[in-house]
Image (cartoon, rainbow, N blue to C red):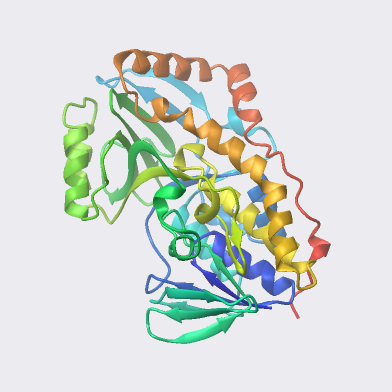
Length: 395
């Protein structure tokens, strides 16, 4: 089948890879003019790690990624509240890596080895599904026909809007905004250590990475519409963090010279179905669990793999393939979403009481038996991936 995949982040190139393996002809289109840079660090584990292994990209992910040694929570004065080694969570099998989202996307895209037509700097303007094919008009004015269109274009999916309706029908705003930015030469440094600091209304995380790079992650309470202009976004962060202690002032000053800057509202996408006719959705476009879940990228790869597997054995029956894809994964994705919704108070406490509760929980997580019990379940996703033999090999 000729399949248009909209979005060249995580889910899109993963889907294209496995569609190609299944003998289909995918085309990728990406609104950005090239591979995106920046973004936050993602913790990559679970069934997504299994998909990466089957793609043969784990060695490169390991080379580009990081094994953070320790997490440390501090108070406004910098006093340690709790410390725990991340190996406590991961266990002995090393099936875990922390990696910049843009690096993960780059490695997945490289696995295509130039075998997939990719159109950068364009996107879909209209979709016309006549039952036999989807007629696509691109922003560039080009018109093409595909047997299927799959939206892998993220939380703010244009494909979802065109095929399913306004975003408000499916987006659940969790009342937070999130930002990630990195700088070179920031001091102090704690190499390969995650330092967490929270006050009522926000959490600030500092990660000291190799090559003298420091990444900062901010989550802050914000109930209104998120600004779109970067200057307004940074102004909002300065307002929300203005009364913070620890290194907050220095971080806000460093933000103005950041190499990369990411900002977005924290939301989930909850839909009763991920397809309509010959149009389907995958990744955050279909069922974003929000960054609070910590597994969005890995889950996107799982969704892409399962969708490609179902299309591979569909014998042209896209309706049945879409239905099986949803049946396999809907419960898993909903459970991840439900779990994430309860974490908002940890990422940005809404009151002094919640701040005390967060800090007490972090102290408990410093106990190895508690950490293993709590995190062990999340490192094992309750999904059985279709066999790799479902797919043909590259010719």
